[in-house]
Image (cartoon, rainbow, N blue to C red; front, top):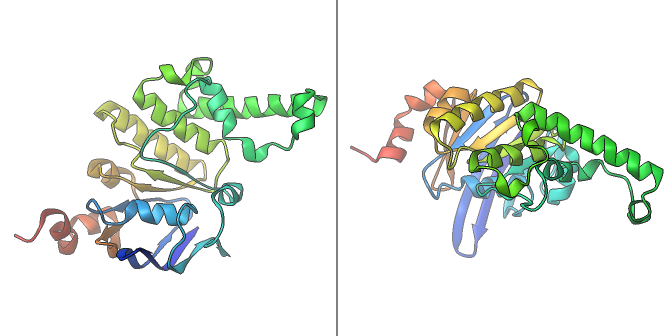
Length: 250
């Protein structure tokens, strides 16, 4: 589903990533972990087109997407969430998810301005699809409410619902459990598994190790901008180099 080949990223005199290669299997949940400053978010930013790597290539399936713009990647089915929840606060919950369906819209300025029949039909279709994803994520009861009025945990879920509306092949989640309490994290784990079961591949950067070890099929460990290890949760838990990176040499 996703392959990175020798990704290096240099910011001025700082090397954030060095020759990082990895593969993500289709229909899997893959965790990317590592200490602060390991290069995890930089890696996500490169995959999703926010940064351009200094060298190396990124493949979605067999397609080299190394120089694709973010909006082009969304059209190809690659989307992401961010560490900080970014919602359209003055819009309703339903309207926030409808925004995520922009890649499916074909109506132009004229048809929207004059509310032509084709545009009205398309708007109804978009609203129906948005309601589907609110049902999927358990937010349908909040559909008419202002996004500003959602508690933080539901805001996180709404951001995920909005990315799912694009009907992606692959979703990258950057610290989805950040700021959640234990009950909300448990609900998030259930949702991420549900997303995988629906045929969407998931990659997540996360510091909550209990969550990572619980839901991930495989884990990739970064440290100081390099890939330190890769394997199953159990293999990572028993890896001495990983333990040392997190805890320091005893």
